[in-house]
Amino acid sequence: MGFEQLAKLRDQLSKSAKTKAPARADRNRAPSAVSKAKPAADGKPDVRSDRKPHPRPAKPVSKAPPQPKPPVNANPVDPVVVHIGRLQKRFPEAFPKNPAPKVPLKIGIFEDLIAHIAELKVTQLELRDAIKVWCRGSRYWSAMSVDAIRVDLSGAEAGRVSPEDAVRAQKLEEARVARVAAKAQATPAAPAEAAPAESAPAAASEPSES
Image (cartoon, rainbow, N blue to C red; front, side, top):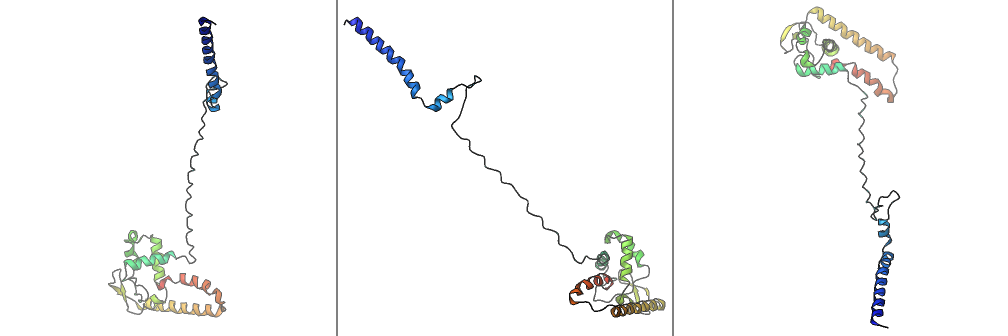
């Protein structure tokens, strides 16, 4: 074999090795790389990622704490008692607190109180009801003796109790005592467990004893 034939054979073997090398490299490529380069049906490259997305942490659901229920007042306070309490706080000399005895009020003291309605936070009707309740009951009627001193809002002397007013107060007290006695005789003794229910209205009906 001549040198020319050997050179030609070497060139053929070299070309054959170069053509087989790319095919072998394609076969050895990982499936993931092939899948990444595979075009999609619409002609666009199908880009895929082997990484799995991390799940986002769920946001904690904030629950509002349950609102406490307002306490149920079994014995609601009479509004008149509240208004009398304001009078006692503002004018303690004219409206003394129990157990101090009540004092006869000046005739026309309602008109003096009209000027203090805004301060007392009451209406004229509420103020009139408070005065009526205050001037009722044994604590007030027992103070209405003949020639007893009447006082104004500051506690200063503003007149005297007339005999007619004293007699009227005495009759009112006697009528109250008679009603209480008649009610006690007509009402049978209540069971022990029913006693609290019977005492609640009585407490609300005696605000004049404040």
